[in-house]
Image (spheres, rainbow, N blue to C red):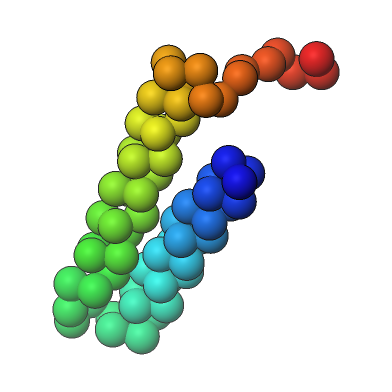
Length: 68
């Protein structure tokens, strides 16, 4: 369940990144849709990092080293 949650967050982040690229190419700087999409992407990224930190602090997520 945790893996699906993180994967969904990453999917939303990638979608907003793609939307920002699309709006940048289509709008040619005439609207703020690019800025809004990239701002949402940053917000989702910060939220995902915060949720992982909270999960580690509460014991829901067990961190492990690389190659462990």
